[in-house]
Length: 378
Ligand SMILES: Cc1ncc(COP(=O)(O)O)c(C=O)c1O
Image 1 (cartoon, rainbow, N blue to C red):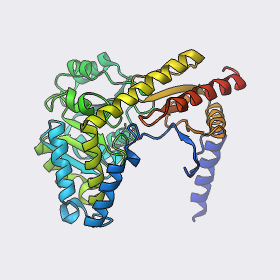
Image 2: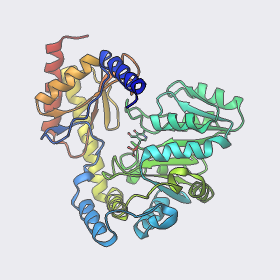
Image 3: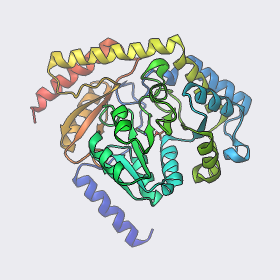
């Protein structure tokens, strides 16, 4: 390694260590109660999803073998795309290897054709990086500030408005209907990563709530409520065909495996069915149970209607300490620190799932209450 590079790496490490922002991988092998993964419906280990994956491996092999335009697009991919398009009432669906790739690619590929990209201040890193990499003029509006978004959109004729349905680090929801009214001429991209499967009729979230003419691009991900991995953008056929020709992530990258598409198809079947409805109901019960117990113990959690709840702890060290003390009590809930969130806003991002038992939620709340008592209030 070149000495200059070593110096840069060491300085960056030292700086982050001083700020208690240095991260390290920790293998998730311990038998802890998981309150941090995005497996909202517990589909990651659902027998039908696992069986479909196994059958897919047997029938189609471990990998897709090529990019979608070469030979990586196989019958399970096509079946999945067609089902998703129908379910979300869109003309077409384009599959990507991840939500990050989908958002980044969409903005890099189509961003240059807009005069302005308008992003909510809390939009995900993939959207922010995509906007930056697009070379298009972009700006952020204050979080959920409808009037500010409308004001900026009105000043530049060809704008693309970008926001999320459920914000990943805060768990609150975008005011999509008001944004659409405030920005009537703008095209709209909604990242529905944390809403799809969980919210609305049949778990369709924004796809069920907003038409294709209202929301031009809808990003959905399969690594959260679907319990698998990968992502898609639901859009018009014209846009889908353009992306397949010009998105570098699609043209120059291997497609996800057909077995994975088969597992996602199985997850979709569950999400659309009455057992999916029962899982969403179980999740809602768990959210309500968590809220009730937080109120009972006076926990200063920002209570949100969806699965993501946040306990703001402020300083990085405090968030790390609370997370570590929870781990010692058998609970996995990792600290979220800058630069993922703003300075001074380190937190626990508590994720609830349909698979949690009431007793596990009670264990979490009582453990948190006693840890905060022990550490003293900040
Ligand atoms: C709002 C949002 N969009 C996109 C992504 C990226 O999705 P993926 O994990 O599939 O890359 C995430 C992941 O954390 C997210 O929270």
